[in-house]
Image (tube, rainbow, N blue to C red):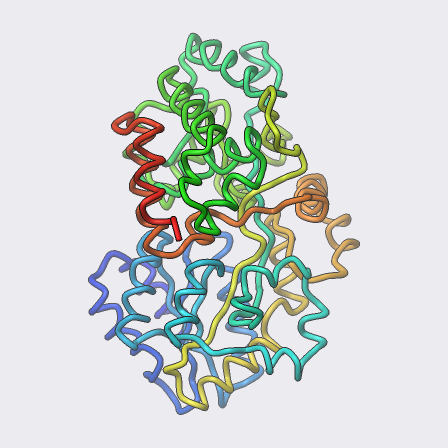
Length: 436
C-alpha cells in the first residue's frame, strides 16, 4: 500500500490541494490508530532513500506505521502551507527550517520538541551541531534535523571546457570572460531552471556574500531599515543583471523547471558549460547522466571570488540539513509514532549508506570512513569540507525569511532576471517586506 500511495500521489502532484488532502487524510488518517502521515519530495535518487527509511521503520513497527505521500518540489511548497493553515497537515512535516518554521512555531502549528531532545540526548549528539540552528526558534527546538548537508556548488562540464580550450573560473571577471567564449561555440555558459525561481536565488546568495560578506543579508534578516539598498547589495544585483545581459544563461531559462531536471541534462549533455546548483545535483547527474560522473567529466568547485569583495571564500550558502516537524494537530498516538521515528528511524545505518551511495553527505557524525570508502569519495570529501570548514553557512534565503517576505523575494528575483525591475526597484520592493 505504501508504494502505491507514493507512486499515485507522486504522479498526481499537480492535483488540487483539496483532492490531495482528501487522498492522504491529513493528520488524522487514514489507516490504523497510531499511523502517522508523512509528505516529502519525490524525484530520484532522494525519493528512494526517504521511502526506504519509511519502509524499514514500518517493518520494525507494524503496529505504529507511517503512511507516506510524495510531491514535486514546487507543488509541495504550496500544498504544505495550505494544509497546515487548514489544520490538515500530515503528522510529519518535511521542510527546510528557518523562517518558515518560525512562522509555524509562532502560530502554534508544530510541536515544541525541546523537552524531547533533553530526554533523548544521544539523538542530538549524533548529528552535526550546525544542523540545529535552522531548527531552533527563540531558543526552542521545533524540528528534527535529518538527511544531508547541501551547500550550493558550481558544477562544470570538463569535456566542454577542454573543447573550448578554457579553464574553470577563479574570479567573477573570469566568469564574465568565459561567457562570450562559450556562446561563440553555441554552448550555453550556464544552465538554469529559471521558472522555479529558487534556482535563480542561488546566484544572488553567493554574489551578496562574495561582494558584501554575510552581514549584508543578515541585516535584511534582522529587519534593518533599507538593508537591501546597501551599496554592496546594489553591486550584487547589478552584477547579476550584467550576466543576464551578456547572455550568460541558456536561452529560454525562464521556462525551464528544476523539477523536470532539464537544467541538469543541459550540463551532462554538453549543451551548457556550467550550472550553479545544490549538492543533491550530483546524485541526479550520476543517476541520469550515463557515464558523465563515472568518467570524470563532471567538475565541481565553490563559487569564485569577486574582485574587491568582502566575502570569505570559505563562506557557503544552501541547506545545513532538512527538517521534520510534528503537527500540533496530530493525535497523541501519531505524535508518539513520529517521535519513535525520530529516535529509531532517522539516519539509521542503511539510510546513511544509501545517502552516501548517491553522492550525499549525511548529517550524522562519525561517517568519515564510509565517505572515504565510497565510489563518490572525492565529491563527498569536497562537500564535507565545505560544510565543516565554512566560516558562515547562510541558509537558503527563501527558507531563512518569513513566508511573506520569501514570496516577495522570489517574485522579484524572476523580474530581476527578466530585466523588468532595476536593482534599485528590487531593493525597494524587498525593503518594504523585511524592514522591522
